[in-house]
Image 1 (tube, rainbow, N blue to C red):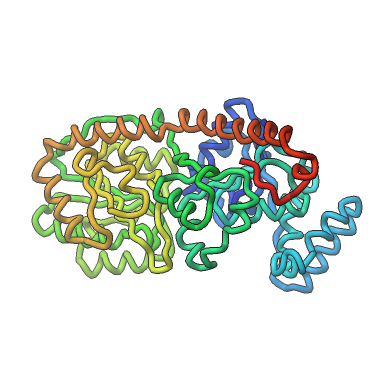
Image 2 (cartoon, one colour):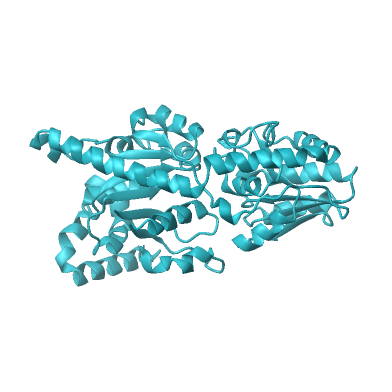
Length: 429
């Protein structure tokens, strides 16, 4: 199949779930093109970006000048140098139909990378807002194919709160099919108006073969605890820091390493200083996958303290938690978003309420006092992740979904009257 991925910034180190799908499709012999924008930071990229030469498959939206006059002149130059595409480009400026997207010329700039594209079997939009983008680009005539949108977290939580519960109304009608990375977000999409027959749960997978399992036992040098995640409110890292500080009063030989970066770095560093645990809690910054694996390999426990942010942003079952579980780490997660679908409370780890540093500290204390449960919980976590989130199985499932969407669409077209088939408003499952 020929597949287009519509994404935001690409590649992004924190979005391995998109990368895993792209490389999985390529390995299975499918053609994949990626449409997005250049990320701000390209200093660290996943090794698969180079291995599969993904930049060569990526078509970037031209930089949009902030000055509107310059933006207009640059847009006019694009139209004049691509005069044979003028009808399409001029359609993207239809402010009566496309409103601010057309008036700001953002739609015009989004069309430009697609000028040489051929029809696709599948247009897979990663995140709901890019589903809207894909819908409009298809409506303009810039891209052709069956439209599938993946809901992954902030697009079905924060974005809905910011833009209104009707933000996906048109997409739910015109989109061919939808994927949610957990049941929690599938139910939310249905509540917002998505036809339950047009959406299934398709989790974000990891390559379990890259994350070697090993049983965990106490070490004379101390207990190493890890969190991997962006330093943003949704990740709830402050509560884990406070929990570790509380436990450190009783156990001096603990170490807490936090992998990731973000706008809360200074604030979290201040919390660490105020709690006087700078010798035990370290902000390590971004690490590549090999570095993360090395750190997890030496760790004993993992914390994923996600919370619902003030703006409504929520997490799905996060891949960093899956990676830790795949390596045999007992975990502490929160009763938040899709995390309870991943962590089986009392079996592979513990679940605690959001924003409850005392509850995290209590479970850390239990783990430290009962190291005999580490191996059993770690093994249970590995088994669960391998059974439910292995990327190879999920990529096979993704191909099957693509094939069913294409097949059911074509079969239904044969049964519909020609006038109905021509209608752009018919949603084919």
